[in-house]
Length: 177
Length: 218
Image (cartoon, rainbow over all chains, first blue to last red; front, side, top):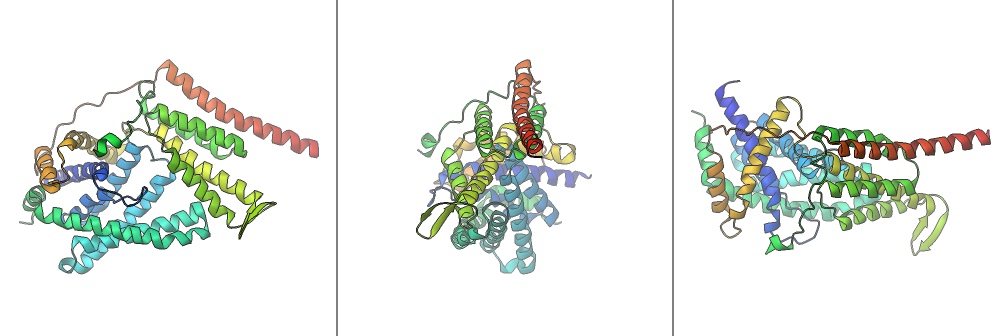
């Protein structure tokens, strides 16, 4: 492994730590509903999509779900299955949106696509494995809340990407020569 | 302040008595005895035991969240009537089979979360290069979390930048401190045997009763 690749992996590990960190500062933001989660942990994933190739983004998602599973102790439960499936579906859709639209899409649009993909997969899993077919009735409000969180995280990610001094330094360092 | 409203986590009393891998193995070995248990009453008792262990492991149990999970799974199960009718509430018919099935499913899922909560901890080392990367994630996470108090909602991006610039300079690789290894104590082994013995014992007794009943019937 060359030095550059090693440095990139180190940064991905740091981004993984940032994912865990952002999920712990969610309490700074008011919640409209008690079980509502903004999904701030996706912010480093969104930033990484614009910085690194897809393989690194998928590695970051893997580190994010494993880290969450180990810290919260949910690694051996259905929560981990839901989180993994939702996170990977979201990452794949966000990557597709970014590579198909490139400069025509902002992080806000990418984030909304990701949130919708994650919610569709999680509703599908909960209907299939936990609640049964009757649970499709929860899909519309769940999707609506998911879209709202996608917009909020997307707006914040876009601002962070354009205003952060730290992101600017990373972009300069890893910019193609 | 939001921080004051947050309940403190209980102390992790299992950590000093268990090696992370041994605790993980306890969770893995108890799993079949839990999943194959056919009696609802025993299943509920097991869930309470695992909740107690999760509490000992320093995890905050959100009882309302888990109660709502069980109740909602049971409710959706009731929408497909099955077995003897217990009571009719307007359009909803509560049947014994659907109610028991829903409760069994709900408690099973909640119990699996509790098993995971007590048996998985951050110092569980995953194998290979991926395990090494996960260890790096935790190394950085601990350092970032130290700067958490400096994050201000008013100047969010600038204050996050202050923390990040201090911790990660592009192209740098931070030195990792050696991880402290915890060995399982005699008390830890005793607890491990007790948890496994109790759960497997209940399953074996239940299977024996079923077998005797079947032989009597034959």
